[in-house]
Image (tube, rainbow over all chains, first blue to last red; front, side, top):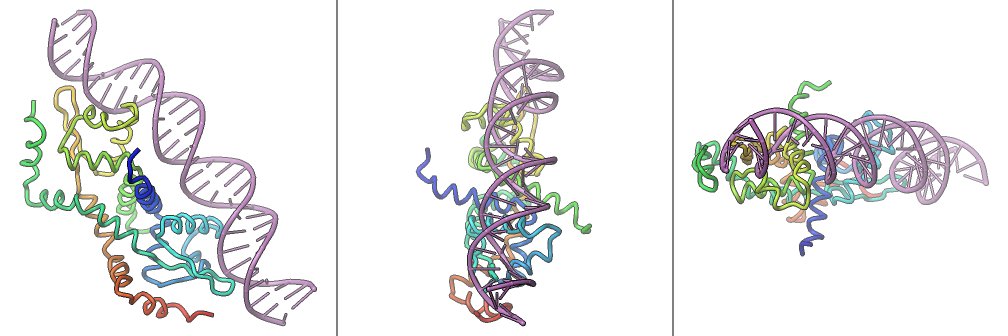
Length: 117
Length: 117
DNA sequence: AAGATAGGTAGGAGATTCCCTACGGGTCAA
DNA sequence: TTGACCCGTAGGGAATCTCCTACCTATCTT
């Protein structure tokens, strides 16, 4: 329907990837520990390695990690660019939580909507 | 297990709520159109109203919207505070996409990991 | 060449998600 | 009070998610 279909698909994959605590933890491990093979990542989870592989696949398809082969290992690295897009998505909401802290919320509330019954 | 269990549950609910394009669109409608009754929101979706009600419930339980009753209507309003927490979550990743733009990525890559085979 | 190691894919079970059609509880108008 | 309207919940079906146990390929070691 929309002309931005491909972009929205990418956005959807990123948000869906972030919806799992396991996958967010993988991103944190790669952020704090640098690029790592699967084995090193797997030590932090109470889950079999094939399951972790599937999580890595979801992260890969969202563009949040990349893979480099090194011998029989595959080194995963954080790719933060899609997170920059999440921040962009967040930006138009920023004034809403800032306004609320300043107590201006009620003023904005009455503008588009009617008064209370 | 962890002492931050309750916090993580909240974080999980927020990310899970954002994982649906429909729910993100609801947030956008409330952001751009101000507080609205369910009926007004429903006009924008090709979905029956009970289904939208369930999406609103997910958003409510994530703290992303609040409900005010006005006669037989329920006015939903955007609550952006959880999105501020998403921004906080995003913050430690920020230097990764900034570094990458400056071409420093390879330098950081070789620091925690070994050289290539 | 044979065995061990790293890690992916296949296929399936159980839980969860997302939509639907009914239906019920309030609220307003006649 | 009766009926129309707003919106939530109940229950169910199809699809998807998330984990598992095999099993496979590729690489390194001996």
